[in-house]
Image 1 (spheres, helix red, strand yellow):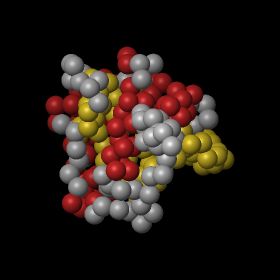
Image 2 (image 1 turned 180 degrees about the vertical axis):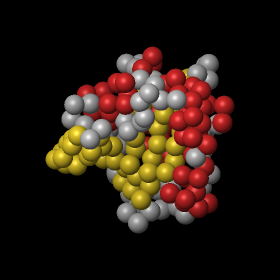
Image 3 (image 1 turned 90 degrees about the vertical axis):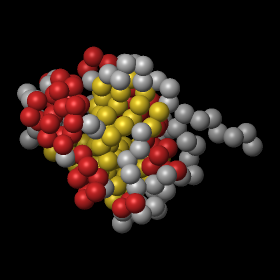
Image 4 (image 1 turned 90 degrees about the horizontal axis):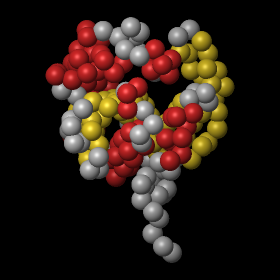
Length: 192
């Protein structure tokens, strides 16, 4: 695994989406994106979500990477630079693995945003950070997240019962993983 203290957070592109570090001027767009009751059902964000919450989120991103190895990114549409989502990876250096989490602005759902962002971040985690494992955990009830994980080539490993506490309720977590030996997301395996 690469020495994380030497890694600057990149800008990742696929022609349609840009996954980039947060900027201070993103705070208002973050507040608008996260002030959604459906989002707060799946993601541990405050609801209602205020401009102060958005300012805190983007303002703390650099510290989270340098101190916690938690890389947080804005997901924008390449053509307009509009904020369409958020994606992150928490790296456990001891286990050489990362947990990917994401959310898509409610105005941009069902357009492949999560799939595109996960593909970009997963390839960076495996090929640049040289992690030995990347995983996604989601509620069994979160069909959109399950579909995104599978569409990116993550393998379903099982369900952790009552593993997560969200809004004072216990919830199961489905676990999906991608290993360095798996085909990269978005790429067809080489013919044998």
